[in-house]
Length: 538
Image (cartoon, rainbow, N blue to C red; front, side, top):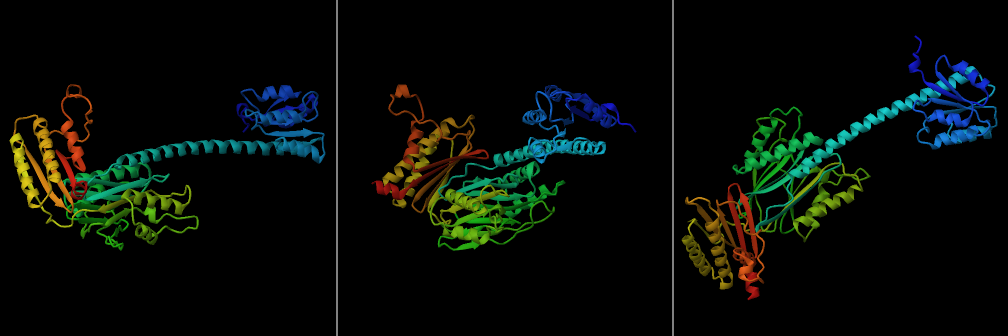
């Protein structure tokens, strides 16, 4: 079949002798579309047209602009640099050929020409050019797909980072911090930490199989299910069993997640845990010894529906530190293909004597990166640390009282606390600020927190923990954080300052620690007064 003219490749022949152009045309015109130019200037004009030639056969010895100069200009111009040039010339020295090739020519044919050689060389160079164009197109497709994949990974990374908390529950009983650093090809690491009620905190670390958006969405589902279930279920075994059943349904992607879920009674130090195929956490005791929590309570989550998970109870002591992590730490490898490993992590935790949990987490991540080497992170890295400083007994002195939303009931609380303070020999500089805080906060709740006339209950719990007086006030009034209100300018007159705010400002100043959270449908206020600091100031 004869190739259609519109599909023929174009060859530009540049020679100052028309006879040479005609000769080459006769050799090539049966397979190619041939154009001619008798000087360099005309050749450059043709080369810059929209329908560029696919190959140029170029004579060297020409009046005006010689072939070397034409070739040099073609190769310096980005629009024509990719057009292959074959010199056809009477200049036969090796130096001439080397010079032509140095300028960017792809081949060099000497006169008198052999038709068979010309045809073979032209066919070879046009075939190479076509292959290069095919490769460029394929590369462009690959780059487009790569960009799409990167966009998906970026979306997954954004979902992942948006789902993990940046702020953590605060309490006089413990301190907690966690961090997640996604790899470039984002995986499915996550963590969470939230207060279940005033006495319990739930926290967890997980690692979803797979990468990109599917892993990120699966992670979001797992995290959401855990938090929703923990609000009404005190058992980690029951929580993980429920999450497994839900995630196993319609799991067409065959994804799974390793989980370590904890619920801590912050007052007693009782820790419930369930390990579903996750890396064993490390528990550092106050004496510096480390216990590996190696027990497994079931398979990875979402691998099989209907699995019943177990749980274990661990008693935390004051000063204990619990470390949760993903395999992005222990399986990080260096240029010598050595793993970071469990033993290295244990030594790192054992050697760390001082500092906050935030500093501990950041130190572990930084050490992991240093071990891997620059820009070698292959997997997500997640680390969560909890330091327990609360009381380990339920026998702490204290009392609980429930009052109605009536201002007259405030006196009942103050009387009860005054009796408690006297029985525990608290100085006035400790008990008086607490009484003032009761008066101000309860009056604020009762006067402004309710929109109906119905009876509401306000719970007050007071504990003497170590050298702290801890007060927890719980109410079902409208959501309101009294400690975020802008502080009044006490240098202004009463008329200039306006109404309200001064009492709450005083509470923040007379108490050593103040916390607020909204838990389900209740406001929870926690106040802490340090006894030793008050005595030192006296």
